Amino acid sequence: MPELSFTPVLPKGSLVLVSGANSMLGSHVVKQLLEYGYKVRGTVRDVEKNAWMVDFFKSYGEESFELVRVLDIAVAGAFDDAIQGCAGVIHLAMVTNWAPNHPDDVVPLAVAATLGFLKSAADTPSVKRFVHCSSSAAARRPTANVRRVIDSDTYNDETVQAIYADKGEIQGLDKAFAVYTASKVQSEKAAWKFVEENKPPFVFNTVLPELCFGEIFNAEKQGFPSSAGFAKACFEGDLNSFAFLPPQQYVNTEDAAVTHIAGLIHPDVTSERLFAFAEPFNWNDVLAVYRKLFPSNKFLDDMDLGKDLLEIKGHDRVDRLLKEMGRPKGFRKLEESLTQLTKAFA
Image (cartoon, rainbow, N blue to C red):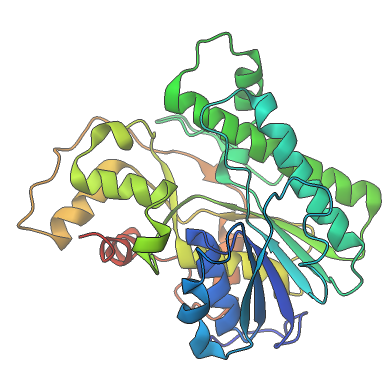
């Protein structure tokens, strides 16, 4: 069990509700909560399909982890039953019909899901903390070789405006990610507005994770979604499946999970946006790690990619939080993160 440098606001043994528990990040959040001594109730759309998780986490105790079904997170009251008896919430589940559609097909559902969950939490006296998983995309649009500074007040409004003004110029994966971005921006803004206007009896924080690279617990069941899929495509030389992503930042999946838990239990983290950004990288950096790890393999040649020159005010804050959460080295490096990931497919 990691050693905390503080007394957590939620006592060990408390029950925490994790939505989207079967995702790559969600499964890490579950594992880390169990490592820190909490009980976890995870929500999924299909309990039978994700029953592997119950077996995977049974070493923490037969009653430490359970799965419950929430079929449609955008329906009013969707979490009313699942949240009963929970002291904390980590909201990771998202509307998944974002590729590629008009934002009006996606954004209202994403906002409804977030606000519905917040209302359920506000109506549940046992809930003391609520952590909402946003996205790095909610704060910035990655662009190579452009110096920008973001802070806790920065939102990626430019992408939201572009996708709503789109007259057919945005196509394919660019459109899909623009719609995804709009859903994340508008959901996080709606969440903060709800908290400001309704003043619920719990502490609310958000986490903005970057591209997550790290261990996959069950590749057969979880597959290689989003970030992991891009890294796998780079390993396999499938340019069309990853090269469209500009230089940006990464975070180890476990570090992203622990950042969410810091927002849940750290007494000094209140009403914060936590930036889970480890370091900038581009795909040439990934290829360099692959060549080191697998010297007999033939990989793609380096590409003309540029660099991510983003400055994040608050980056050091999360690095310190990780250390206070029992991770003395802070953010994990890219090589360690990719080493963990490649064990699932190389």
